[in-house]
Length: 335
Image (cartoon, rainbow, N blue to C red; front, side, top):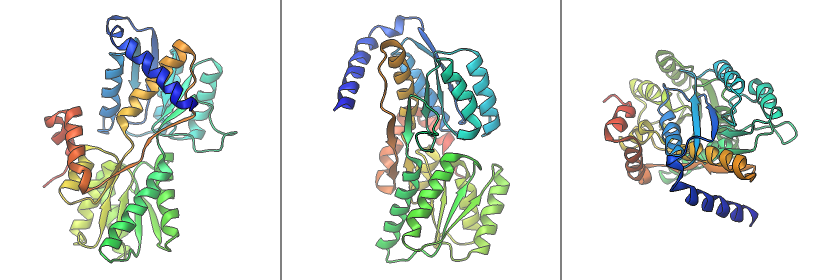
């Protein structure tokens, strides 16, 4: 009940501000220090939602991320953001050990922190004391994808012999949690799961995927938990003539994932509703700074499993966000 009342108050404040905030100068400056950079299409969900909320609230939001995934570079950007003494920080906790010291230092300096996209998975006494987490439950992403795949095969009266989980961003705690969810759900069915590191380089992704499948001819499911690796895994499957045997699944509601489903290359993906992961952290930092309201400790906005039955609806949603030209540019599949 408390949460419902709190959200009602926040929504009321937002409605009141929406008419006047566009003409105001920024009252607060927040930094969003991410791991999702220009090489990842998912960055557009975050930057577009941030641009939208900046039209509603009197805030400036500076988004920074490495060109390619790097926890070390994310920490460097975080140090720079802290040095700028912002009114708040939004940070995906890609590695709680690597990011713990600077974030605890920022919080001790009075800078409120919101975790977005990836949370600190450790128990409460050990967890970084940020205000709230906005994002999906990565463990549940793996668990729910496992249940979807099990149902997909059951409808065809087929048994799954082995599953491969491919991780592109090695050391990414969210990817590891996804893999764990898949592995533990499959373990209940006595189905072995092989976890492999796909690296960041396209040619190496292909080589690792191909060699893994050649060494494991009983693989029936390949789940890629970092979306950009998916086309290279698909190529390895096709080159080995295994597209009728292996069900390929991926992650995130990107144009690449949705078009992969519509083309029949991919059986399912998931959404953690990236747009909300840009909007809600900014909203909560503003409400906390301006009115002193403290958000709930977790704001889960996913996972939502997407398959062929929902892909067209998601395509329309993505085209509304990105535009048709950008959507097809980001789809990324070679015919």
